[in-house]
Every structure is written in C-alpha cells, then in structure tokens.
Amino acid sequence: MQTWESEHSDQYERIVISQPVTESDRNSDVLRIPTSALAVFPVAPEVVRVSVNGDERSVLWSPRSNDRRSGTLAVGMDVMSGLPMREAVQIGVKDGVFHLRPAPEAA
Image (tube, rainbow, N blue to C red; front, side, top):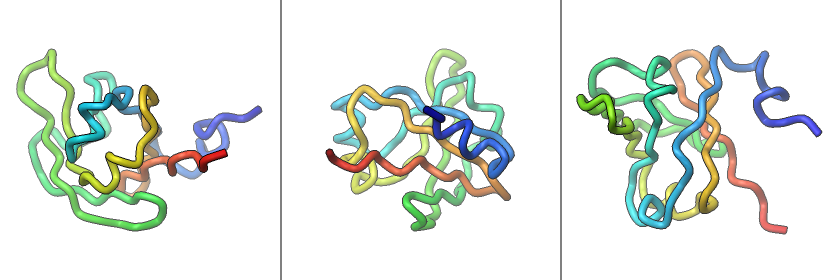
C-alpha cells in the first residue's frame, strides 16, 4: 500500500508532517509544526497560503523563537476540529502554498 507521501512525492517540492493532533489542538485554531519541519516555512512570522481540501486561505505562520517549541500554523478552528486525533497531518509544499492532506473519510 502506498503512502500519501510516496503517491505525491513528484507533485510537491517538499513534504513534511505536523505534530500529532491532540484534543487541545482540536480546540484551538493552530496546527503545531515540529522543529524538524521548520526549514520549509518562512524564518519570520508572516501570512502564508494554505490549501485544505482544495480550499485556499491565508493564515498566520509563527516559527516561535524558542528552539524547543513547535512553530504554529493558524489554519482555523474549522480545520482543526475536523482533524483525526493522535495523527500527524502531512503537508505538501508547492509554489509557496502549503497543502494539508485531506482528512481520511469516515468508514
């Protein structure tokens, strides 16, 4: 079985993953980005383009200044509340847009 990363590796410039989504995350508007993935994001806070299920929006990116803290991508409570618990979100980067992997459909 192929993973999202292997299926889309030629479609994106880079693919990174978020921190696993917690209940607290689902009740906030930010997706946490681990330090290992910070290199694909801007070095300073700024508004970036994010695509969620084909819907593009401008959101605030904050890299945080403390090396031990995750960066945050303010994708909105509507997005965060729909993400599966304890799973990381895959993010494909193409032409400056951060494409969040669509949430799996309910079985």
